[in-house]
Structure formats: structure tokens, C-alpha cells
Image (tube, rainbow, N blue to C red; front, side):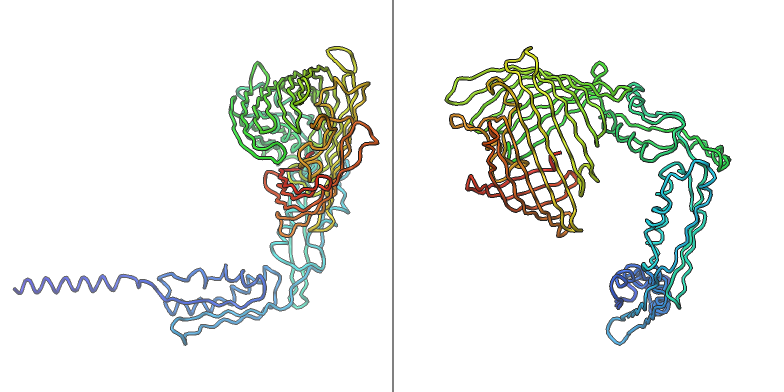
Length: 591
């Protein structure tokens, strides 16, 4: 019996010892109240130790009191990053209630503003070839000028932006040698000083390509516009990278300076040009790919699409597609050769297309050869096409025509962004025709042009202007394929009317006309980017005689969303001549 009692007593002693070594579970529950103006409230709430320790089981009353004592120093450091160097800060712990409350009160006082900015450019004048930038403009673009409130984040950002401007041309290895922000709390002023050292004058060297396995080296080298010895240019490298990405051969492309020889580069005197190779790192796309998609347009209805691509068909790229829409069905395949050393993109292709629009049914078969050149900002091309067209209107017998037109096209783009632009313009023109009596039923000449202007009127209001015009000259319209004639109406034409509703009436159908003229004016208001609203007025028509180009008007309102894929537009328009309201949906601008 005594042994049992002794064992029980020993077990109790062990449990007591374990209980003494076990930390308190739960700690003290407390709340924090921060009283500070504007963004300082959120800054302190997110960064004070008092907030981070809430709910920690190790917090007891002495630790909580210590955190409250340390809070004013922490708060002072935080508000100084926002430019407030003479704050009045109070912190106290209220234990009168059931749960302790830590109260932090901050009066930031007047902010420190930038009083003077001193910028020294060191070493740039020793190269003997002048500066690659406008020094006066560079200094005026400094983003934290005198009079601006001094914030630590703005100070760091201003230095980064300034250095980036300097390193864009020739001086790729320029560095921030010194930077100092001297704050006078009594005067509420900050003196900013930076020294930028140029480093060596950098020039491009030879081209090194990494990552090519299936495709020839010429796929890259033919697109290279950089010559060994050229002064370094960030824009030249970015343009080269964009051209490579646009080929479709690669899933990723990176063009950079090859700095593997850092030791030799570091030893180069600043007055001697530093030559660095251009490194191109690519990851090849899969040779074959299949893509499927679906969509909806108020112009041509629902859409199903199937694409098949092969990046290596006897040295060419195959791009093929099958598109089935309610009003249009298309099948086409094109073969593209790699870009030539002279910058030409050559291709051949063929396809069939059937359209059923406004009572006219057309079936077109074509083969074509095309040569294109230029850049996304200035594209040019020449296309020779052989086509046959079968045209049917309900009450008439079908007619067939053939043609061999040659067309020159040019597009000029000046936009801040090619996918989601906010300002700029686009001009597009086409000139050509079937001028020879070879494989052609009716000789004709054709000219067409479109202009697009996007201009911000304020930070929230933008003006969008569109204009389109076209003309076909021939002895008679019969025999000219309808593909080269004109109709108007629809999402990107005159809203308030059905797709290609405006044209020449023929036995109850609307058919193509010799002349086209349309215009549009739209005001967009971006109340909460990327969301906006618009009001617009469209007018235009298509006719066989210029005298009959009496404009038909449409006007309405719309919603806008700047999506990652481009602007999405939903419009409600009233067609005055048709006397009806239509819904229009479109993605992107027509460039």
C-alpha cells in the first residue's frame, strides 16, 4: 500500500514540474487603436510591432508594456519615410477595461519638402563623342524636384529612374557613385545630392545565340539590325527582341549584353570604349501546335475557330486556320519563309471563304504571294492574288468572275502601346487593282484608306476619331469581285446599322459599291480605369456614284474596359435612317 501511495505522489510531482515548464497558452488579448491622418494610419497599422505581436501566446503584461514604450520610436521612423520629421507621438496602454487597449496618437506636423537638388554627371565628357542625351532635359525630368514633399520611396524611385535614363544609350554600365539626402527638420527642407559615374562607353560586339536546336541560325541573324561597333542602345536591343518574338519560332526571347567577361570589363579604362557581345537566349516553340477557340461578334455572329501550325515545313512556317461563323466561313493555309537578310518576309497561301450578308452570298477561292517588310510602326507589303468568285442573289442566276489584282499596302502607327493605346494615331492605305487582261474578267483600279486618332483631352477624357474612304475605278462594275467593292455599317463602321447594311440595293439585297466614306467621333470618360463610358456619333455610306454618298447617321452610348487583350467595347446605337436601336460588341480597335 505504501508503495502505491509513493508512486502516486511521485507522478504528481512530475506533473507539477511539467506544468511549471509549459509556457502559458493564449497570452494577453489586446487591441490597438491608431489615430493618424491619411495614409499614415495604414502605414502604422501595417508595420508597428504592436500589431505583429497580437495573438502571440508569449505576450504577457510586461512585454505588452514594453511594446507600447517602443511604439513612439518605431512610429517616428515610419512617418519620417513619408517626409514628416517633427511629429508629436503619444503612446499609452489603457488597462481599465476587460481587455487592454494600446492607443497610438500621431500629429505628423508639417512635411519636409525638397529644397535643392544637386546632380553631378561624372566622366561623361571624357569619351570625346558627346553625350547621347539632352543633359538639360535629363535634369528637368528629375522626378523629385524642389518644392515636392520628400518621401523615402519617391527618393529611391527618382534615383532609379534617373539612372535608367542615363544607361539607355552608350553608358550601359553607369552607376550611382554617391547619393545623399540631408534633412533639416527645423527648416523642413531636404537637400538632395547624387553623383552618377559614366563608366566606360559601351559598344556592341559580336552576336552570340543560345538555345537553337531545330531551326537554322539565320532565323535569328537575318533579323539582327545591330552591327559590331555600334554604340550601345537599349532601344535597338528591345526592337531586336520584339522582331524575334514576333516570328512565332520561340516561346521566350531575351536579348542582352554578354557580361561573362566581368574581370576584363572592370579593368577597362573609362576613356576606352568597352565592347560587349550581344547575347540572344531563346527557347524554341514546339514544332507543331493545335489551337481551338470560340467567340461572338455582333457583326458575323458566333464563331468557332481551329488553328494548326507547323514551324518547320521544308524550311517554312505553316499557319492554317478554319473559322466557322454564322455569316462567314473561312479556311486558309499560308507558308512563310524566314526573314531575309534584307528584312523581307515572303509567303504564299491559299484559301476559300463563303459569306452570306444582306442577301448576297459569295464563294471566293484564292491563292496569293506576298512580300512584307518594315516594323509594327511602319508596315508595307505587296500582294499578288489570283481569285475566282461565285456570287448569288436569290432572284438572280449566279455569276462567276475571276481576277488577278496586285495590291500595295502601308500602315503607319504612332501609338504609346500597340495593344491598349491611350494616345496616338494609325494611318492605313491600300492601292492597286487588276490592270492587265490576264486571268481577269474586268480590269479595275482601287484605292482605300483609314485613319484613326486617339487623343487624351484630360486625365479622364479621351477623343477618338475614325475616318474611312475608298474608290474603285472601272468601265463597269460587273466582273469586279465583290471583295474589292465597299459596304458600310457594323461595329467598326457606322454603328446603329447591321453589318454591311449600307451599300447599293439590288433585288432586295445590299451589294458592294464603288465608293465609300465613313467617319466617327467618340468621347470616352474613364471614371475608374480601366473602366469607362463613351458617347459617339457615326456617319457614312457606300454608293456607286459620289453624288449618292448621302451619309446615314448613328449615335449612342457605350461601356469600355481596357482588358489585357485590348479594349472591349459594348455600344447601344440608334440608326437614324433605319429607325432602330442595335447592340454592338467589339474587341480592340481596327488598326
